[in-house]
Length: 179
Length: 168
Figure 1 (cartoon, rainbow over the protein chains, first blue to last red):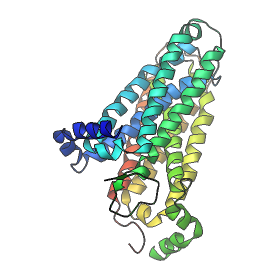
Figure 2 (tube, rainbow over the protein chains, first blue to last red):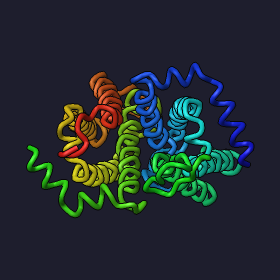
Figure 3 (cartoon, rainbow over the protein chains, first blue to last red):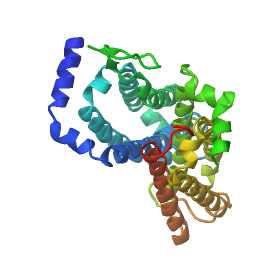
Figure 4 (spheres, rainbow over the protein chains, first blue to last red):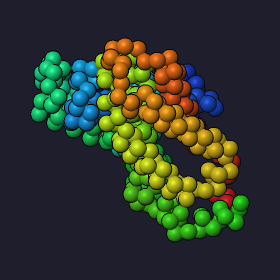
């Protein structure tokens, strides 16, 4: 596992042009702002669709509400791109970071959960005119909301779990050290 | 202002928020601030996208069901933001950008209230697939712009402060 991590860090660290760009004065903060805008877009679309499945605004046809999802994909794409830029620019800060690992796990689970919605309940939920979403769709929606909130929390906690050099003083929060 | 900053920074709440090593102190407050942002901005963005014709089939008036979620996000951020301000009053209040951020949020929330009162709440004659009025579309675009600017200003606060603490 550690070997794989080191290989990943080295692979990302080889992309020196992106790292140099990211470390110019305003690029990192701007990318962070875009990352926050993308997350608001994602929660405003996917999150609201989940809430609709759970029964909020039950007079809105599910098919109409689902049209917001494409904008959620735009938000996700924006965050995948800006997120990759951070990762490439400072690989060791993320690859060895337990909060980052948890965040990626939650993102993958949220993706699988979304796929399960399209495999199991999309047709029944969208085709019908029923106000009430099928039970399976409601469970998937609750899991989706929980996972995306977890992604935000793990993302926000990232900075407190940055690895530190083993020789130096330990930081205030639980973090692993890099030899 | 320094005596005021010094006093705030010496209070128990300020010291706890700033220095506690508990994950439930500063890290949890920051997380709450991000979640509140996602909820408040997210609902406003969805309403704006709808008015701009991006999710046309939604009966506009039904979007009012999401406003309690928007207000929950807003108050969560007012509360978590107040704690962050109590933790670092000098850092925030000596940075002009902090006032820009508050102004942008005030503008965005005012737009939100106007859009809600004029275009979301009224029992509507407009069929779900007809375009929203020109005014509604302009206000929706302004709302999106104000939120993007508010988020950017908030994020840049971490890079633009000149003083961290009153004596530091």
